[in-house]
Length: 73
Length: 191
Image 1 (cartoon, helix red, strand yellow):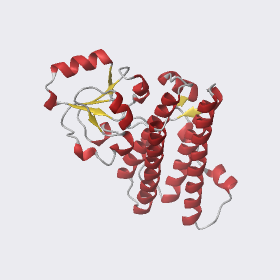
Image 2 (tube, helix red, strand yellow):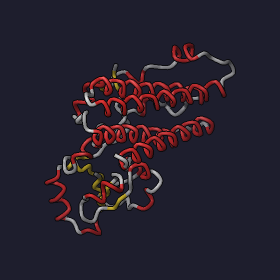
Image 3 (cartoon, chains in turn cyan, purple):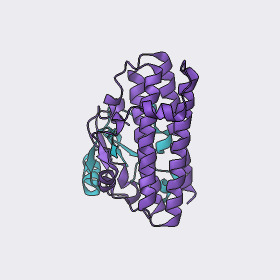
Image 4 (cartoon, chains in turn red, green):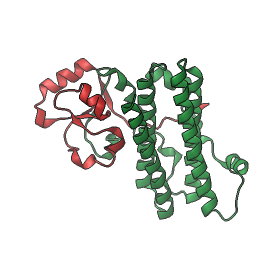
């Protein structure tokens, strides 16, 4: 069978590019968004990352600033 | 999900955290939107939603066949069962608002299959994400990314639909997808 693609666009950055991006931008000018589960966040996360687990994301978008570049993982 | 909600610049961080690498979204923003023109009557919306859920169901069944680990197989079986339940609720909603009651067979014959045309095959989809099918964490993460995409699609569609009754139905389905996402999240927490 064929699968319809129904995805939203987003550029991908690999981990190196992510590190570079974060170091080139002040922390208050970007959002690093961790959408994993809290247990995974606790285990390890990118410093400064905001935790909003994926199941809650659509209800909590107002906590984020859409003007800021947002790095999601 | 963010890119469709007015966020100016969104990047997926790929590869850094292995379990999350499957979440990379692809394709332009209107992909999948041609499933819905925005003018659909409630009954039409339900038909399209049903075919979308059929896609999810078949995807999980294929994953179940491919997986070698018994626990992972069981998990896929459970996930495909959930989609069957979802389809049942769409079918029930259809009969609730339709003038004439249809049997499930009659309903399925009528459901449009365009959602499944012109997209990726299950194999191509898997190649894109290359999940480790024997890792429960990766499997659940992939399932979550698929459910999130479905939720995202329903939410984007909802804002486009004019008929209030159709809007309600789509919102209800979106809420059910959200509930799926939550239960998958809990599953991941309890591994």
